[in-house]
Image (cartoon, helix red, strand yellow):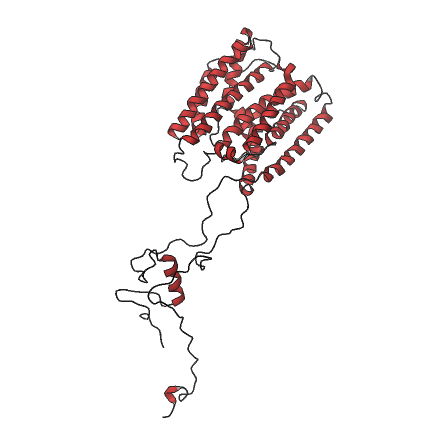
Length: 411
């Protein structure tokens, strides 16, 4: 029997498939009612390739972070060895005390950066906040530590709360809102035409081990708490998963507000420590070099620029490594600009983010299935008309003899 283009045509159809196998596949994946073979009123299937992967469920592989943190520890150990070889007194008291206070100040900035990055609302005002707090402390430190620091903490918390409300109510990116706040802080800083001398005589090096120990405890314990699944997902609710302008609801507002307020407080304390250990007056500037260092170290520690993902010991090791490098650079008189260091660390942090995002998701055994393949399970759908479908057998090859076959047979 010969097959032409009308073999599988029903009344009213203008054109149908002539290949039964192709027609069956089209019916199977295109029919949405399952009651008729007439596909003339059905929308053609437009999706091809593999089935899209499931949405991110918030699980992360911490082993990737731990492996990277071992490398950071090795880098910190190498820098410590180089510093010890260059100046044996650099890691001994009293030089060690000043080194620990510097590490605590950088560490608090990095903690604020990592916290807001995990929450998906990066606070790029950390550097200006620290510099404004340093100016505030320098001008008022002669009135006592409390009177110089407490007003700065109150203003920082209030500013973080206001910016957090702008982020959550308008649902705008955290970096954009905090960048706008940075401009206001820079105006406050640059109202002073000359550098400001530190009026007080408080020396934080006497509590150097306490300060650095407090930073280390906050870094490790906070990261360990962030490794708990529910806490990790709660903190990373602002991580983009679809349209970034889509509102996330009240549940996502809480971590955004908390992290912006806490990071502003961290930056304020860091600015006070920087001013209290400064060798000279505090010069008015932008402070963005410290934002770059803080954000770069947070990324280098393993915190994802997209939010939620982060390690446990990475912040401690990264801050230790940079603190040792800054002292080594000072002893060797390399005279590297802080902006150059910030840019280098930031670029390295972006590379680490790509690594974390590529290998941070858990492996799954299921792979995408070919949309053109037969379904792997469930009830097989079959058309109602006809009830069975048999692919026609291949006709026997014709012979060259005219009298072969039934037409040439004699009667």
